[in-house]
Image (cartoon, rainbow, N blue to C red; front, side, top):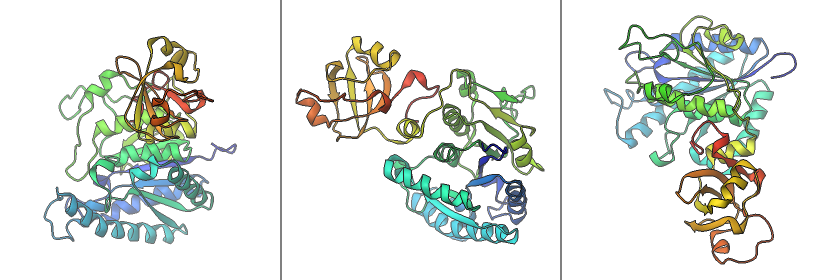
Length: 368
C-alpha cells in the first residue's frame, strides 16, 4: 500500500454475478460492477479485474440451450463470449473516462518463470498508467490439464503476481459460514478468518450455480494462497450496494481472510516456486538431512541425497521428499538429474537455501 493509503486491489467476479438467468450478459450487473470500480479508481486506487463469464456469455450464441459440457464447445463459446464481455467492459469504462485492457492467461504463463515475470511487468505498466486490466483464463485454447481450474485460484495467483494489497472475491453468497446456510438455518457468518482449519475445509461445498465453475472449495483454496502470500482478502456478495468501496475500507458485510501470526510473506521468487512452477522431478533425502534443511534452513547438498526420481534439467523446480516420500519442500536445482545421478563432485549446493520453499513454513500444500 502506498504511503497515502491508496491500494492495489484485485477483484474477482464470478459468472453467476455477471449473467442473467438465461446465461446472457446482464448489462445492469455489469454497470453496477463498473460503477463501483470507477469509484475506487476515482479515489486513487489501482484496480485489476479477474472476470469470469466468457463461456456463460457465449454459449447461447453458439446455439446451445444450456452450458456445454464438452471441451470444444466450451472453447467455442468462450471465443464468442470473451469478445462480447470485453466489448461491454470497454464501452462502460470509456464512458467514465477509463481504459480497459484484456489479458488472457494460461497456466503455462505462470509455470514458466520468464513468462511469469513478463506478465507481471506488463500488468504493472498498465496499472501504473491508470488502465483497468481485465484478466481471464484463455479458455479458447487451454486444455484441462493446463487449466487453473477456476478463476478463484487464478485471482489469488494474480494477486500475488502484482503484489496486491487486497484480494476481493465477489460471489452469489454473503461470505464464509460455519455451515452450509442452505441446509442449516443456524449457520453463522464468519466475519474474520485468520487460519484455514480442517473444519473449514471439510465444510466447503461445491458450486452453488449452474453458470459458474467455482464453489466454496475453490474459494478456500484461493484464500489459502493469498493468506500464504501475505495478502488480506475478502469474500462478499456481488450486487450489494457499495460492496467494493466498503470492502476496501474494511467495513463490508462478508468474510475477511487475514494472514495468521505464523504465516510467511513469500517473495515473488518463492511465490513462483510454491504456487506456479510445476515440479519436474523429485529428490529423496536422507533422514539426517531433514533437520538441516527444514528447521535450520540450510542448502541441500549432494551428500543429503538418498536417490532421485524422474528426469529434470538444470534450473528446474523439484520436489524434496523424505524417505517416506512426504513432501518437505520445493526448490530450484542447480544440476540436472543426469548430473546428480553420476555422483560426481559438486561445486555448489544442489538447491540453495534461498531457492527453496519449505512445506512446514507455508500454511497450505506447496504447489497448489
